[in-house]
Structures are given as structure tokens and as C-alpha cells.
Length: 396
Image (tube, rainbow, N blue to C red; front, side):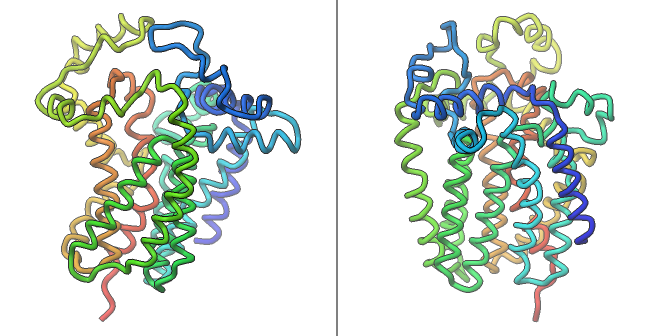
């Protein structure tokens, strides 16, 4: 197991640094903000504050209110060795190696064998390295930087997955020994997840909602570690929320989209909002709407998630194992750790279904860009932990 994990880590590092950096995310979502921070000293600059709305022109950044975790790291690195757009790729192999490590750390209290198996399940999930790794073949990998198929190519989904996995691992460790310091560290990682990607804030809410749900049932978790985690997370998240409130939300303002009325409308049979499709894609969208894409949004999402859960080439055995683990977790609901992990994974899946129900974007276009694969990647760590914990027989 150690040899395989080491080989995967070295391979991920070599693969990451060999990729060309032409992806949309690292250039427009991260490097642009990093340059503003490096050269202007603040992100509250006219370069972001002066951007126009969805019908305007001249915008450079698509989502000006994206979190600043990666741009801040790029700006710090630039102070040491000058600016480089490629710097965003350097830590990605580290995130990939952190995921199985966090899974093993979380389950070491059960047994070394359980920790090892769950870590290998996480490390051998193809989605960590590339979407459709075994389906697209080497031809597409040679053009990896020109597409959005490679997870190690400079995006923020892998760092968010690693942060959430680390927070869950430390929260479980804090529960085992009733340690507030481990809870503090879990809170720091949750704040880090929020600083990496917008979904980090939503997943932090799911993280604590799962804990609160666990407290309502017998065999309650310990209170002190979760309180310590919540306090540190709130203190770490507050500065970013203060900054984000001053940045424009010109493309995806989920504060307006995420309403009970819109969710009920989507569940009741909302069709795809073709008016939200960019003009350059209008003809393609109209053609797709005639065929399968014309199905109601709820049907498309159900098919998309079903396809992911059964896609062994992209996910390996992860999701089939998770679905089996849910069954065992339900039977062992009195065990706080397994119950909390089950709530966390189920809550994350439910959250992303709801987000995709209300998103203003044309769903077939999102599917083409790797949604919901990239969203489901965020839950890889807790999912592997749930599999390892739920499928390990209880000690007498």
C-alpha cells in the first residue's frame, strides 16, 4: 500500500507539472485576481469592482466574487520569485496526495487495515487525476491543458476536496479523544475550504448540519470539539465574507436563485432556461433542446447522477461502495462517527442536487464541462471514510 501510494504521489506530481496551462479556471478565475493582489495590493480594485453585469461588455473575470485562496497563494509566491501563471499548478499534486492521507488518518482509530483500504480506495479513484481517465485515451491527455478534463490541471475542485477531507479527519480525531485543539485545526481547514471555492461555504454548512442532526439522536457526539471547530471556522470565514460583500455577483447570484419557490418549480417540471444560454451557444442549445436536453431539469439531473454513480471508469468502485455503506450505516445508526459521516455525505449529495436544480446555467452545457463530476469530487474524502468505517465490523 505504501509503495502504491508513493508511486501515485510521484506520478501525480510529474503529470501536473508537465501539463500546459491553458485551462479557463487558472487563467481567468485565479491568476487574474492574483495579479490584482500582487500589483495593486487589494482585490477591492476597479479591475473587479468596475465589472459590468451579464448584458454588459468588457468583462475579464467571469465570477468576480470567487474566493481568493488560490490567488492569495499566487500573490505570495510572486513576492518570492516573480509572477508566474503556472504557479497555481505546483501544489495540486500535494492536494492529490493529501486526500488518501486524510482518509487514513481519520480511520486509524478503527484499525490500520481499515485505514489502509479506505486510503487506497480514495487514491485509486481515477477522477482525482482526470475526468474519464480510462475512457478518453492518451490522445485527449496530450491536449490536456486545452480542455477541462484534467483535475490536476489548475482548478480548485481538488484543493477543496482535500480541505474538506482534512477537516472531517480532524473532526473525527477530535471526537475520539475529546480534543479541542484538533477541533481548532478542523475549523481552520473548513475556513480554508471556504477560501478556495464558493461550494466550500455550502459544504461547511452541511458539515455542521450533519453534526447537529447527530446531536438529536442517542449516543451523541462530544460537544467541545465541534464547538471549538465552529468558533475557529466562523472567525476564519468572516474576513472573506466581509470582502465578498463588496464584490459584484454578476453571473451566479445564488442568494436570489436559491429560494423555496424556485426549488418547487424545478421539482414540478421546470424546463431548461434557454434565455440564459450565451449567444454563441444559442444554436447548439436550441438543437439540444429538441432532443434529450429538452427533458425537464429534474430528469436530466437524475440521469446525470445515476450515470456518475455507475461510471466505474471515472470513479472506480467509490460510489457503488458508498451506496452499500449507506445500508450498513443505517443499521449502525447508534454509532456517532458513522452516523455523522453518513449525514455529511448524504447532505453533500442533496446540496448539489438542489444547486443544480436552481442554477441559471443551461444544464447540458454544465454537463459538458464536467458537472456534476467536479462537484462530487468534493465529497471523495468523507465518502471513502464512510466506506471504511461502515464496512468494518464492530469490535465486541
